[in-house]
Image (cartoon, rainbow, N blue to C red; front, side, top):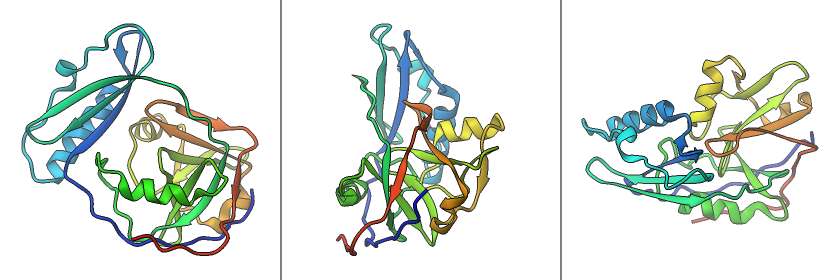
Amino acid sequence: MTQVSVTSVLPFLVSKQLLETIRCEDGHPFNLNYHQKRMNKSLKTLGFKNSHNLTEHITPPDQKLYRCRIIYDEKNINIEYIPYTKRLISTLQLLQADQLEYTLKYAERNALDTLFKLKGTADDILIVQDRFITDTTIANIAFFDGRDWFTPKQPLLYGTTRARLLDENKIIEADIKPSDLDQYSAFALMNAMIGFNEIKNGIISPIKGAHDVI
């Protein structure tokens, strides 16, 4: 893998509305218990005692593949089913954003959308915080050293697929710096919709110049 340079951005404010994205196929939601755990934890983190029972709310319209998009807060929940088309990603550009805050899956994504515009000709960006690699704008990441898959110990967002794969001992947490990338031969992206998706002949390339985003 190519060693990369970084650039910087300034912090953004986010709203208190939260988001869950759940894969629904054959009339069933996938990984539901992990989404429920994250929803409960997110609301608790924001100081709320009550949550929503996802089992009672999710009713896919048919057997097709959908991205179930859930916008919620402590009182309200809104669900829509969007036919899913996979976004192809094979190239990433590293971008430093030390002050970006996205530990909860907020519906407000203006900061990530602004950063995404700095990707140049790559398919997405790979965010660095405090010298360590975290996530892309839509997925957690893992790196293969020829034997094991390693995922950043402190991701930007603790994803549900990442949590499941850690519980299944299929990936290992590690601190990963940009300077470590030459130790790995491949990378994979993971989120609720794509599962664990190994990228064939993926490239992580440098960014020219520096940008500040307000």
